[in-house]
Image 1: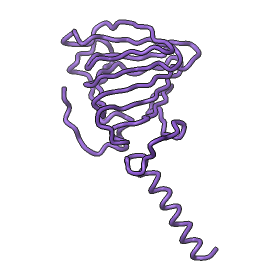
Image 2: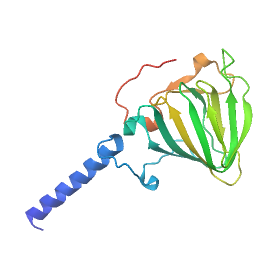
Image 3: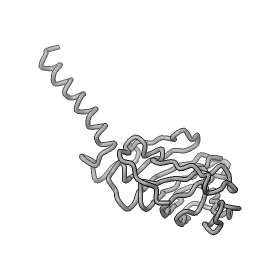
Length: 189
């Protein structure tokens, strides 16, 4: 192979890998229209979860909203958690249960309401209300579109519904923001 061909090939490889890295954590060169099946997805150590950030603050420079596509296998769930932002869910397919504890108890979440969720349903989580989404179905995935305000999300995780608010563990940046997160933001709570 000629030197010129090797040089061109090397330049193409460097360009490809630098473009891939830049487009994942930067809005520079980010196409306006993207194919969801080509976006990065991961379970972030949670078996049964598939998370895709469709558009986000850390990866795409959004300032007011962030949008995720999450799929939960039967039996999988989110941790019990709360965050200092509003959250809206649209159930695209499947069914499950939303466990929601209103922010009315000053010391801990308390006993949650159990609310059925199903295909074509939508629900919202008020700021700082502890909640958990669980695919309680036996055979079908639960797939939801999630919209949050005030990204990037700061999540407080509970071991159970009676764990004191002061003992909840702050996870920030959250798992899907870790790779691209560059600045430290003081918690608002």
